[in-house]
Length: 374
Image (cartoon, rainbow, N blue to C red; front, side, top):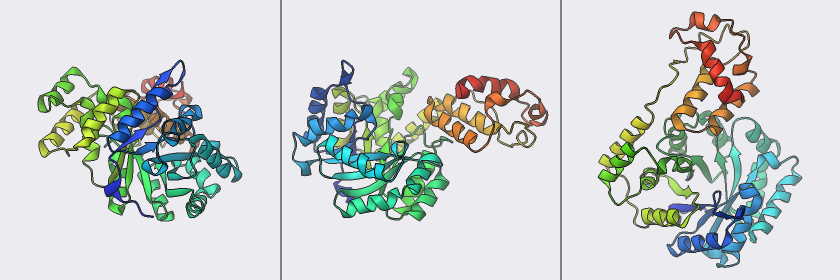
């Protein structure tokens, strides 16, 4: 069964950041929020085996399976590579997920966090793509895809190797559009060019784009006084062709109401509004950076084989985009490829002797140690 984009809700309810009470998911509030969302005519719920220590999937049972007709809602969940040791684990986890959610099939099923290296290799080694197709043939999965955190080149290779994939979930927001680690814009272009439907995660970048500096918020308020700052981030993503559903990890009723308002009578960004978003992005990203041009003169003679420009790329990304997970993951990937750590620097000085930008590389690597190796 192919996906009909015209019938997919533009707003998806992400179940990763649910409201809590006394250290556990507040099921009563989740039920109220699910009802608000469903009564607004939307019905795409995204969970995963590992969210809330597994309790997110249990919330699906309590808020949806026990309270709403099965065909009235859609559930997406994910298979985690880091929990797989043998092929038998695929069915074990899948059956556990069905039981947790109180369902007998999933509308959308994803391989979780596919990326260059470890996770991607695990899914290939354990033949998870063919397994997913078998589950679909059994009627246990209606649509099969993956969430992606890797490089554009790897995405291209995956899509060539696995034409059976029906949709892909990526991180995309206006702050990360040109992020050299996330590369949202390039991933979007690849998927859009191939006509592959996209589910979008982190459209508000974990809440970062819902609360900006007073100067930047004032720019948005002046243009649309009655619209929230978060709505600009959601409308940016929703204005892109080929986007199937946009996930928002809503943890409060106020967020739910605001997002419903944004999508009930959705308005794509106008030309002037797109220009304003571009201006806000430029101001946001106008922060001091390490002035490395990645000429790589420094790397050839490094006795510790440190990928110095890539270390600086990770640090700059942390400063520009106010996140740690992805840059650290990128950095750890360098180490896995055989490069030295920033902490391996022996201060021999050969790098500084050839740097055209005359950067104090030794001191910059020392600063990077606490952030990347700590």
